[in-house]
Image (cartoon, rainbow, N blue to C red; front, side, top):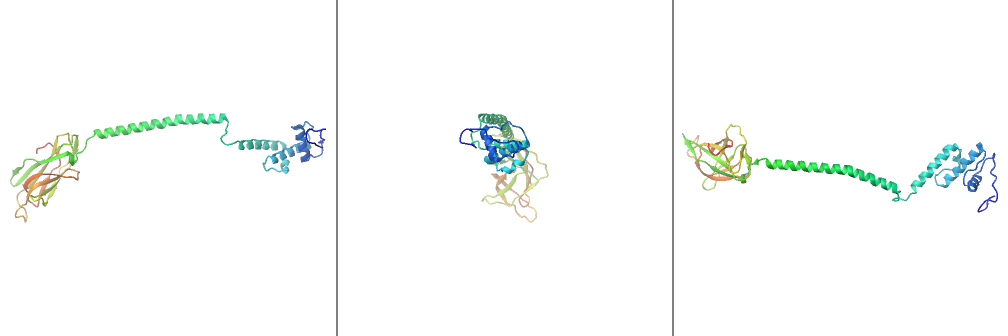
Length: 275
């Protein structure tokens, strides 16, 4: 039998009789490794039982009855379990230096590759936006009411008809353009609005570009002869002008008698200040 410490004699493990779990423990404790002996079916069975007991002691959940599996497969499976247990018992955050170095190298490589690409893309995007902004700034914009000055030019008369140019001058200091027709409202001497009907002539409008100080005009026509039920025509003192595509208006002196229920024929904006 065994005593604490070294054996006083070699245990008799036998060769033909089945080996019990206790005798398998004695085998491993006495030698520290499997003994060299005559290999028989009984010996293989005993070795399998010993390995099964060791695996049960490691907490794998395998019972001694599992020793019925083939010896080679049982040994491989428990060896794998031992490695797995070692990996799971490693303290988090204490990875080997080689692993840390590998992660650092990989992170540096990803950062160098994709970080540079992202920075390059951002640079190109900013450049494209800057170019678009400069292009937009260089292109003339529509003339706004605040950058225009208005006046009505000299009137031409003939057979009860009147013609005059409505002139818009660019005072904004920047090149701009006008396109289309103006809006008109007649105002009398007391500041009251008179009935006004603006009729647009069937003429195709064109964009007129105005440099600072340049002018464009719209040709106006009206009649001073009463029409229909009119016995007398109202007289205007001022003319409210709404530039094309604008909401704000300008007012200029405009002393005229406009008949035919306040009808004024208007042409689209054209270059120059005269008819």
